[in-house]
Length: 364
Image (cartoon, rainbow, N blue to C red):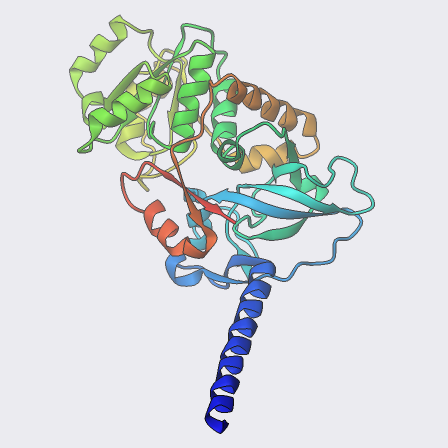
């Protein structure tokens, strides 16, 4: 009987231990968690999945449960400490994403529980399960926009929209040239330009699966896709028998790639640099400035949002225009790979691998 009792007691203890473990796991899953870093460095080394306490809601606060958040190059740069805006420590990674409103403060008027929202500014820290944000830092999204489109709308499509709208008056039939055409911003440029009847010349790096990439970009509406090497060849001028010389060049690379695009711009055209993937300076031939009247500009979406922080109508109008394109099937997100937040190390590694085409999306 003593043996039976001992066995029974052990079984009860095992059951209780399992129940306690399950309860602790459930409690841990229920607590707000996020990818936190307390110093700059390589993301795989400095980011940790930790509990993130929720602050008090406050009168103007909005409690948001995050649904999905992408990993963008600017997010990586911010963690590394090489971005123009750096947060205070400890910080939560991520600048873009989509969440659902859970609760609102007593003074909040533009949002209600159940609304989908995206950040209106950078630096909010979106790689987390939930957070309390100020109402002014959020933009309401229409409920019919697909999750991946909403999660990736605030950075690349907005950048593409502004660059195609703010620097040259482009008409149907005009052309633009861009490098890094396979990037998230590059794909958005192709689609928005196609919707406006603007021709695109898209420059990409050579790679083993080049034809597959060319086909994919053309399926988005790209008119011409050429490699960096082909852009340097004299035969490139034959391209301009079929298409007008571009009025606008969009540069995310810098270095030789930017200089080559400059050579093909129309008289008094504009080159807009919005990234520096090559980590090389933009070199401008004197002749381009003096004899061609080329204009060299820079663009940073974060600064545009801050400059227009008091003009929410301008920002919400752009979001409405982009959502209209999404509904018509004229603007799709880049190929995305959804990864659970717990597997963030895998998502970080994939996002930093050369020639990977799938945008890593952390799902909460």
